[in-house]
Length: 284
Image 1 (tube, rainbow, N blue to C red):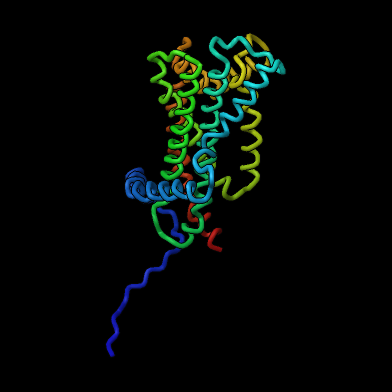
Image 2: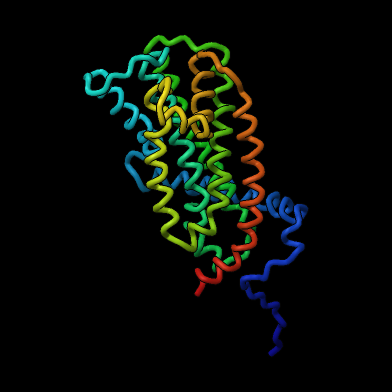
């Protein structure tokens, strides 16, 4: 009997090398990961249909349920918010959609990596595929939320101007802002559970500290806080584009875009450095 020599490959967490941290290698791995990331996204999206009666509706319900609650409180007289310049339902729902998109973009990178940790421990593949899957998910869910928002504007006979075409651009910036912070926080959230809880509490506080369901006050601590709160600008500017209100300056949008790209690159490098450590712990 003859035997054939077979090549045996053992997948183990590799030490981070200077070559793996080069921009050329990083973008090469990103290119290789595009197909796998897209396939994971398609698989997860199909699973939403199979494992839930409401399926994709769960991606649409949260902002409209939250916005609907504030609309009910306002029209019932429990709260009195009138000085928005536009119909209150459009004001609150457009702002809520943007904020929920931000929180989803903030949490999705670590959620995607956490969901794929068992696969990372067993298989050798470009880890950027998980980040691509996360970004596709954020983008897809925003599109799902945008369609009902347009329907609500149509039902209320609210006329949308040409500036409404810029709304997706503003949404993309707030999406990238949340996503870049989310990528940066992946190692910390994977290693320390408290970080995730702090983010959950912090975003809930930001929801009420940022003028999302109410207009910016003329004075006071809320006005002072939001002068330095990037979320205020990333929500108010796209909302004004959508509703046709005047935008004083678009500079904050471009500053946020530039800053998000810097944070994303730093977070990406940190992600590649710490992944061998995280994979080793997962596989232990």
